[in-house]
Image (cartoon, rainbow, N blue to C red):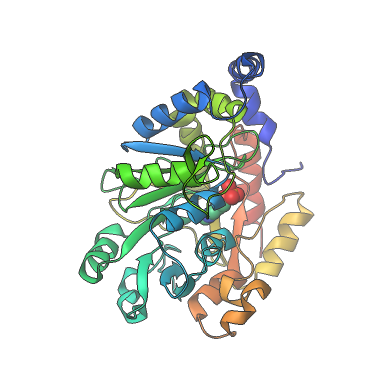
Length: 365
Ligand SMILES: *Cc1c(COP(=O)(O)O)cnc(C)c1O
């Protein structure tokens, strides 16, 4: 059997008629940017995410960039970011000229709240919890540190749509929540798209202005650091068609994850841990092993494509060489980067395919 890491057309086919109807509606409307579909999507997504406002943008990266820009975080400012995240989280900070300060993760692969305080300096302005792999960071102590030091909190929710922590929805803890609708995410569009959510009308208005050349009113350009980053009508229409099915799509992911957790028995692996009081929406199913090359080769031999999220921690990425990061600076993040493996998990994966992966992992010696 051959098992790809992801097979996106399977999720498309589950609700194909609805996507095609939505796409046709958008195509035939004759209006393609900043129109009725986006307006409706923003209202629907705000309600869906239990937030007051949603502003659609071109990607998850742009959501992060514009979130920090709207908060006025820029040159000379420091932002606390997890040392084991996807590079886009960090670029949201550095594209504004601000400086990322890395903080080690906990055993759930999430920003370790207990290590925040030691990283704070007089220049610290914000904390960026990244709800990596589909689980929310330990927000109570993070918010407590933020309040005590008067710091903004921007959540990177690109992997955690509808994840909850003590009953509260991802993106509703801090000043702004940033989402990606990249096709492989748990709420995926059929192209690039993203959004911010917030309860603060001024911040929503600021991002709305920044995404459109810094103008609220056409040709009245107020902000010089505006960009062109809109969630287009076609993607908005497609996302509107997907929203009513998100709970079901996430339940499918949970069912695969449950089978993995119940079926995988191999002492060479560490399975993902779930924090009590915390849901997990299983964007990725990440295991850890000291012999990653061995596991990857074994899976490859069985026709299974696993992936690594992520092999190089941001402080060792060539693009951030100027920050002076060295091997050994963040040993926990570096160990994770050397040891993590993401098993295939996608919508429409069959029980037979899941069992095949379980058997392959269990037969690895
Ligand atoms: C995907 C992702 C992003 C970036 O989203 P894009 O829409 O691809 O720009 C940011 N942060 C995390 C954690 C992500 O997984």
